Image 1 (cartoon, rainbow, N blue to C red):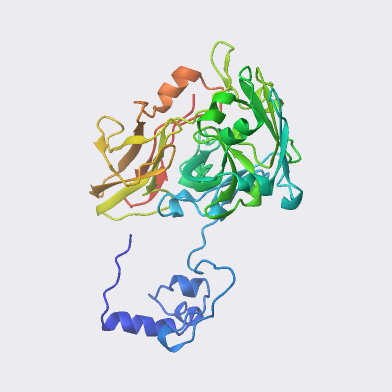
Image 2: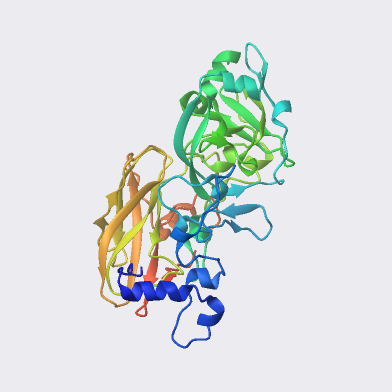
Length: 412
């Protein structure tokens, strides 16, 4: 990371030179244009002498800060730029998205949620009626079950490795409240959640999750849900795979068994060795990712703060560790408060790079004692057929010239 320049005569001269514009400086040998000049952002030489813009109806980012999601070639998903974010809450417009039939446009005044099946009183709730119930707000992560690219190359970023995880403050009504309202029968052990997108996404969910912490969410980070994240209302299952948190929710049906829908038979199952498959593997296991240093960054010898995020669908993160010798030894990193259950947690560790080629790995342990596995341990347990619920230890290689690349592993 470049050092912040001191406020001396040289600094002021350089600032004045900025007013000359990118076109002039690019023609001067040995002068590197600033970010503003490269992007042709009209920055005044002295902001104290120029009246700034007035207040606006909707705020915007600085033109110097332009993080973006990474689009899938088929436009079915987009990934969060984890390496560009600060703190633990993901801005709503950068929250990852995944959909199977595009993003539907739904009129909130015509929205309704039907709850029926094995209940005493089948009921239909409008959005306004949902908002009349006592609400809760919780900071929790969400992650897609397919959030790992096997056999990724060296030029891979954190966004590409696991950008299908994001964190928000979710606001809504506990599903348990609605279940008490309709009178769910004791014999009901599963419910079907159905969306109103073009794919009519449907998943079977154990009723016990509803009584635990399931939420019918209509708010995200202090505002209404974004359309790509389920507007006007969605099911949210903290700590479970994102696909089960059905968006654009329109129907819940109670039953005494799973419905065996297309999305839980042809997809979202984990093929295992021996011709078997692991089904209804909802929980997202503990995982971590180093977000600095990372590709495509470049570092210089000396002290640096290695930092990243860790999370677990089983509860709170207990520890995050770093290894600089391919996993032979591990060093405990500091966790940043607050350490919430089923939430992203920041970790950091001060490390001195000596200029020699090095590798940095991270792993995490959650409060249940579950330890993030190596790639070899995952393959031994599940084989090489699955593309879901992959959470191996990952890391970065720092080359002698300071460039940082992804530590590659052959999957198999």
